[in-house]
Length: 459
Image 1: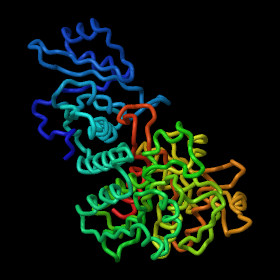
Image 2 (image 1 turned 180 degrees about the vertical axis):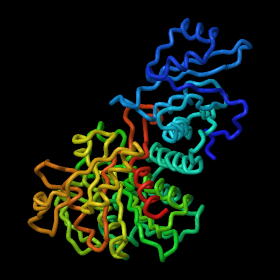
Image 3 (image 1 turned 60 degrees about the vertical axis):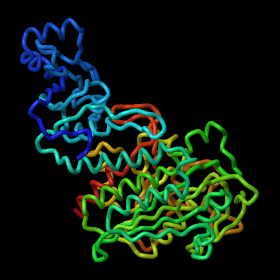
Image 4 (image 1 turned 90 degrees about the vertical axis):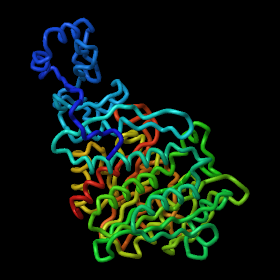
């Protein structure tokens, strides 16, 4: 069970989640002395307002916590994620429940998160007794997986290179009955992964392809591919300093794939899981790949380099080609890929792409239900011609500057043919401004929605 939870409810302090609608009834149950204290402290029923109400003996009698109305366009079901940072040490329970008890409980656990690798700090000594009817085991696996993704992304590149990302994947895989393999350095060329090698060859930290599998081979095949660019300078097409500042997060696709894999394996879903992570560092050196270089790919498609800063799609291309050879029932890739996606939809709403209408409807539905936002974008066939090259089969980055997230998805689509269904998600993997249950820094995006989809299909 997650450290944010406590099963013994005997002495749990009541939390009243109050809105303008229910405030009158909650206030009536507080008693006159408590109500005078509330009025004296100027408590207003506003989202995020918190007041600890004392008992006559000085102990905590109750907590008032303001929420939006469920019908409000600004209603945030993760608002209770503020509570671990607001409450005194103790064990609490929802006496007047929030609008969505399950998401509020998850928010409480997510709000417990602290990144403490480099600076002393303790998680809040605040615990919640789970509400009746909430599957606390499932909440725990989701919260633990989110913590894994956040920790991996928040760790700076000097301590999270390709080898360290491999170690994190091995550590996760060792908790389950998996088969694990990793192809490193020049062995990538020997085993026909030329694009992964090209992107990572300028770094003294060898590129690699992490590959592990779990589950019954007779079950439906689901393959996850995560972009693991542990730091992205932009290569020879060097990023400005401002663009490089948080590029430790460029392995966010890999981090979220590992989080999703953790949820799947811990839940014991009835599927055969394969995880592929091309782990590289896109560096600048005399042997770095250059604009207008041409490389073969695992699929046999020759690729002209239009921009060395469009490296994520290159490493994913080789990994997707390998995944596709197995003809999986469902092939999913996650990557922090394009600034164009952020321009179009911002940091909180990753676009997703698929030609499978049933899959698209399910992804959109579970994204809404889980409040793990995703928005469908089109694999617009007319833009495919923008990827044409005069000297190779395809160019990795059109020069016109238009529809960058779409053309990235179209590029990746060239490497997927045999999979029964394919889903591509262009995540940000980062919370730029702290919100309830979502501290500034690395973030678990898309994994919860996809986990819920897979749970429905293969639970």
